[in-house]
Length: 469
Image 1 (spheres, one colour):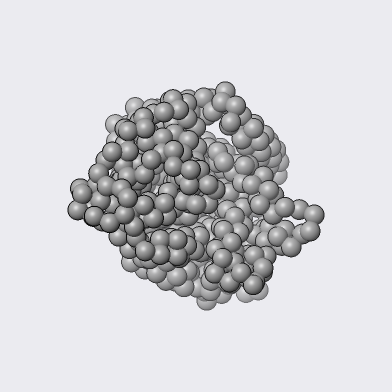
Image 2: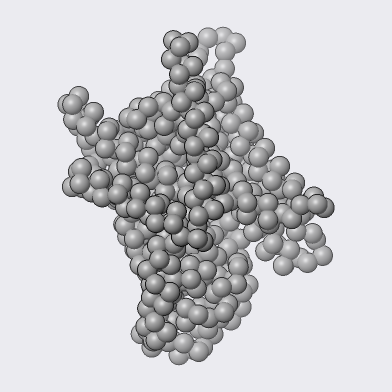
């Protein structure tokens, strides 16, 4: 396995080998809860407020897309498990510039998301302890949670297992209560039944708002692929990837599409609270259902989710940086691992440095932290769709290579190549449509410029590397 091979063994040279310490239960829980992030609990309210009950269609479309993408990624990952995952496959299938580009964009996505998750955690903790500054909580949260990844990877697996378990229990309880309310069994609160699914109009703001909502939906879904990266640090990674890929269908249907459907049945899409930034559709639903301490409960769940995402983001960013270094697309010292633990210590330091710098922005008297983080997050807005597009192109070419080489494909993409073509067409159509929507033009342009710069760097890097060899 490319990412876990030892590159040097001579005395005085450094190791470049990851530890295979993650257990099956760690990966199982990661695969179940990998798509349950703070974006689901907090961001879904604004999606519903803009698209109406038809937001469920955006989540359904996004869910189908993720299922197909995970199937493609699973096909490639079972053939060649690697901590670089889709970045490595893009390198092999499309070209070195493609692996370079998508690897660095994905790394950027997670290090910036770490800063955002720390900011959200800081705001929640400040609400619990108003005498302590938000800035102190943001920095403390960042420094505390990133330390987990400096230890053996099994410690990350253990932390993620328990954080994920809390998220799963919370959303299962939410589904049970909401289902009871829809079936008129739950008699507390102000709402029950499916009245609001169509009472105020199913698609009140037109189809374009549903397409625009897809961007927020895809942002929420990004993270399902982490298990294919983590599996390279477990025993029998191919089997673990097959299990995770096969379970993604029911996870997406139950946790995302199912819960959003229940929300739009119970809560009016034009409820003013849904449009309040950070308020959350789940919290509003619990309030209308008469659940006591709804705000406190959701703050605890969201704090758990963002803490989980921060640790996972740091883990994922460091492993992607490690993989880039192994392929010569990042400084070579990032591939050095600590003897005995297999921890890529310099890749971890490099990734957390950006998050710490962003956390320190909170202490600036001249900058408005939220505005700075919003600006940085705008450059990551479409990375999910770009990552999925690259995965589709990579799978298209890698399957043909495997067939030509006579190799067995353990987990096959359905209806190849037609479903792969359909995914590519859908993503391209969504990106083009957003480019003509006023609300998303700046986002498309900023992300496009950032991606173009990284592509140019990748092409130059590939040319230089070719000349050296």
